[in-house]
Length: 444
Image 1 (cartoon, rainbow, N blue to C red):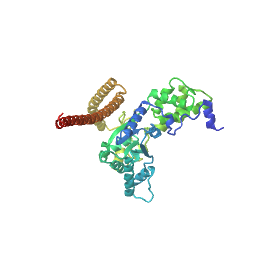
Image 2: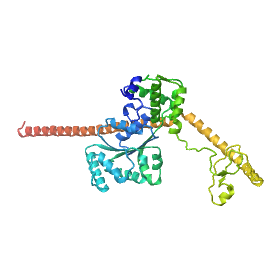
Image 3: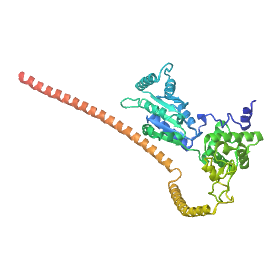
């Protein structure tokens, strides 16, 4: 029996609950996922042109796409591109290949011609080709512009190809560049996958345990889930990583529960915060060479020069100058004139800094009050309301179309009835005239 089998058997699982593979069967329907999924399906069914889906690394974008691919979307034909470190010609080749078109020995112009012919054929057969590009943040602006050009393949009244761009938040920043203005204007549906909330992290963990076969495999003591949310910041992939370590640690110790001290000890042993959330800060006070005396105070700076010299000489000679902050409380040895000038400068700058900080503090308070009045999910609620209104308008438009069609049918029916009545009246009038003439000739 393998270790994985023993591991799952110990907790009563059918499969491992926190596998990192993007498995749609384990897709937890969080609020953000439901919104993104609804937007995605709406955009595909409504031929919304470009669709943009973004989210942090590990937020579940690929899982969302795989979930879409598993659905029955009727006449939708999907091509998916997951390797985006390519140039424009390679991208077109991958698109054609996934649509089943020949690519060997064909240049970009020939492949675009083949793709256009293929899309026209699909349109004639009432099928809707959809292109999904995952990890789109890796595409260069030139390739993104080529993607926009693909959307120009169209008939007089319909787009031949619908395009879904999926990527990390920097994709939004890239699309904001001036050279991609036309692409930005063609994005009709966009959604960002937000991290899980504190409550959703707990529901997510228990949901995956249940899908694996045993929701009660482990007892999570008070404070553990909150610490799990803090450490992972609600990113599903990191929740999976930490959850897997929690189960492995419990299995190794023969435990069926996890306490807050045990969770903190596990995070410390994994060095979780530094491994997955690097700060990029450097240790203060580390400098090479000989350091000249520093000015006392939190805002003081140290000037480092070569051994045997001082900071001013090093700067004048073009030597490297280290302007790292000096540790608070270091003794100051500065010439009297320089110290007096610095004191006057600080005295002049302090009121301005205080005024700026007070203004920022007031602004932050105003924003917090506005946020409290709106509610935490006000933006999402407005988007949901907008989506509901769009659906109502769609149903109303369909009803109006049906009424117009019924009215046209009724008008045709009325005209037919009028024509029949006119023919019947003409026949009756003819019969009456014919009877009078027969009576006149025979003398009746």
